[in-house]
Image 1 (tube, rainbow, N blue to C red):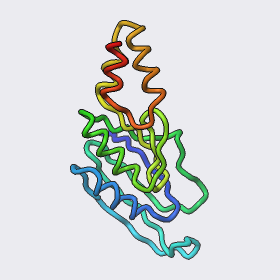
Image 2 (image 1 turned 120 degrees about the horizontal axis):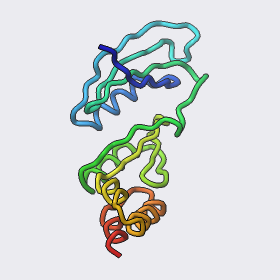
Image 3 (image 1 turned 30 degrees about the horizontal axis):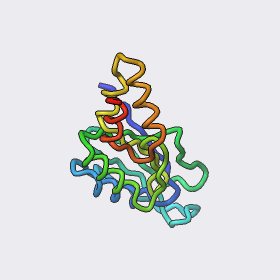
Image 4 (image 1 turned 90 degrees about the vertical axis):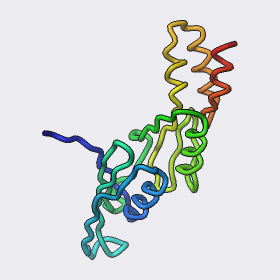
Length: 155
């Protein structure tokens, strides 16, 4: 069996990032961490690890400042309701930077999309006018607000 998983490059805080993510997601586990002393690393060592968040397993490493995370790669959190949106927006955004349309960067620079299932449902409506109103409402938001999406849909 072949497995495919993301591999994320951090400067020197991979282990702190894994601990943070494991604390945000109830169904999570730091699967393994490997440490090596590397004289050229500013933090004195190299860390690579594997973490599981819900149904996604990925690896993280301290690779130094040669490459940085950006919005070209993001993780999507599919939320059941507004309570989930509020929780993940607050938890992952703590110390980070909010963005438009449900996007944010966490304190480590990783981009996340916090998306309620309702958004996908309403955007998929066969009536292009209703779906368009939802799209326009979403485009004006930072954190997605389910009541405002539903109001735009129903207008």
